[in-house]
Length: 304
Image 1 (tube, rainbow, N blue to C red):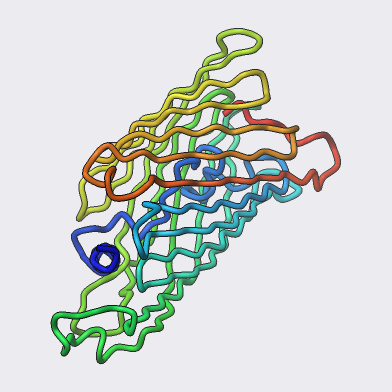
Image 2 (cartoon, one colour):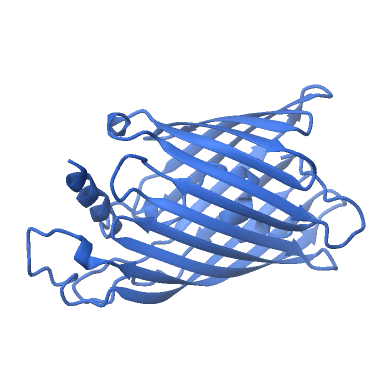
């Protein structure tokens, strides 16, 4: 049974009908929007760093795992920012470490509102362990004649409106559609994904705030996937978030701010479909620290 599950997961990698796993999927993206939109770079008013570890479908052999290190900071004039994303994504017999650098520019609309535009360029190393797979067709032209290592470029772009209590942004990832297998027998390639994200926070009292939001994912070849979430914040101490993910199920997360510099969180993805009986859910850990490199004041704790 475990071998069968392993092969199912591995098949997902180069199936052109299942595309979402080509892009990093995170349940706590609202605490690191830079992971899905380069225009968010520099919004922490500090050197913002974060580590994310995600183990998806725990219990499946060859289940997807992702690790992400994000670093971004405004430049001294505060109208420009730079960033770095280092990611490792593994599923079945495929591993894809990557590194990307980003630049964003802020166009001020007022003292509390601005537009941000971001570009990101990186490189991905697709590594295939063909020998780990079992085949019904022993003369498969891809795995038996193709180098299991390929480097490809990837380019992303994004734009955001950011106000005092709200944001909305659109990003496009892998806009160059690079081929990910060095074989004429395969048309597997990175597909461009569009991410539309928005949220608004309402202050209910001195202690409590409420924030509804959503994330909509779409490629030209795949159906929509939507995250609809509702978060509540107690003072500046912690967030609780419940999310409905279309065609999947529910996500529950908590995020704690120890102070204005250090914060961490945990999320659990609960499938409400046939996957429920086959695995024990998805776990995601998040750790963030903001360095006050400009020494002017403590980094601002974003209301969202």
